[in-house]
Image (cartoon, rainbow, N blue to C red; front, side, top):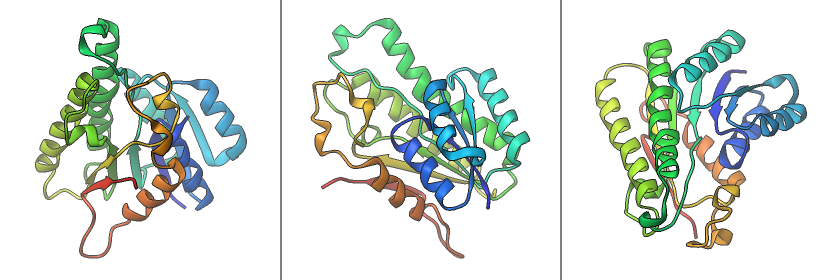
Length: 225
């Protein structure tokens, strides 16, 4: 039984990953911004999880959250960063707050989480898996700032991978093509009804995160039918 850290654990893919990891016998430090969602999940999963309410765009808050997780479970086997936000529509209609929230919640949080992992466990065989989006691979209408935040994540993570070459920590970037969840509530520029199931995406992803003796997955695109 090992410890994992999952961000964005209150809903969507993060929630599905947390449930599957606990079902496999692992402990999960689950991080998210909505305490009620984390508390409800913790009530179901019991002492196998540690709910940590945190604003991941705040560097000091992320540092404290990782302190809590490490004190509870030691060094994790994997850190899976799923947290993120989206605000969709024409750029001309987006507010300053919406734009800054996307950049900070998506890009800044990725930097703060990665820095904690590298500082604490850079010399250990820890997996840092970041869930981006196919919006980090191709531009999409009515998603300009969202795409910018995801392309920024991709650039940062690819550069960090080069920086960490030769160290045991493994970086894995995941590019899902739309996961069905409340993330898309209120958005009318896409029909999320045909998006992939969070449970199926979680099952697929966990299978891919396991390294073999001579190889491992570094970048994964999860496509949908």
